[in-house]
Amino acid sequence: MSWTEIVIEVARDNAEALSDALIEAGALSVSVEDADEGTAQEKPLFGEPGMEPKEAAWEHSRVVALTDVDADQAAIVAEAGAAIGLAAAPAFTTRKVEDEDWVRLTQSQFEPIHIGKNIWVVPSWHEAPDANALILELDPGLAFGTGSHPTTKLCMEWLEAHPAPNQSVLDYGCGSGILAMVARKLGATQVAGVDIDPQAIESARDNAVRNQVQDIEFFVPEDFAQSQHAEARFDIVVANILSSPLKLMAPMLSGRVADGGALVLSGVLARQAEEVAAAYAPFIKLSVWAEHEGWVALHGRLGSDTALPAR
Image (tube, rainbow, N blue to C red; front, side, top):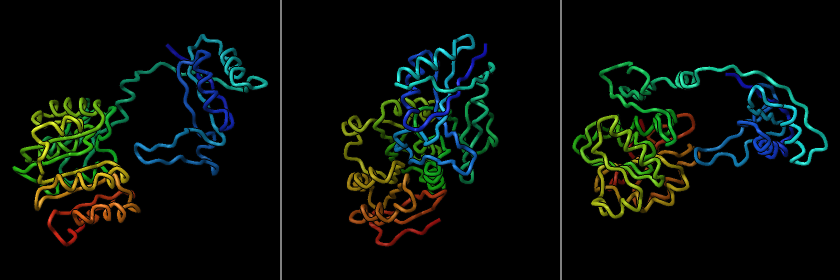
């Protein structure tokens, strides 16, 4: 089977409305691209994870609509143009999309990720490059945290550099559970993960079973507060979230750290490090442990008056 794409170049103000109208007129899917991509006029849209730009549109946008090969593309475009009040149907071109093995094509985009000295994150359809390494089998999915983002890598590298055999670890904002699983595989005996997204909790539990660390406990915050960990303090607390919520949670996260225990924070841009550290200063002294691609990991120990050394 094959499909036909409709390609329309429009002004920013019409991109979103036209996209919706094309779906209503019979398009199977629609995407918006920067029509100036690859030129000096290209204008990237920036946003932190979880804080993406509100509008995926550019001053000179390209709307691409997928249709059945036997659909009437001209009629779809005319109906969509009329629906948003255009005086005439917009000009468009078409291009054929051949059928492919989309599962295999998607999987080919995800290779094993090497992190730190001895950690590999391996999709289920790949063999582990080093059978003797710390292997995490983790498929790309809906929950944030597959090891590809710099903040996740920083936290994993910190855990590898500070193994905690027979200690307790709390992964707050656990996402896929990747940090909790690394801690458990490095020897931590009591590991808990917390996330506000029930879907992330479900994903984390599935990942823990797949990686044979099913004794990790995962909770949404309400259940965590009612669990046996309600008043617990942990030897290591790691939180890979974003700077704004991290600042708000300073009293709570600091209060979860055991005496002499470590707090590790990421999801923090380098330019935000000082303000995040200042929010925690009344409770624990934090310093930058490492930086990667403009992101940092902060760490400190409860009861220590001096900053810990950077990597």
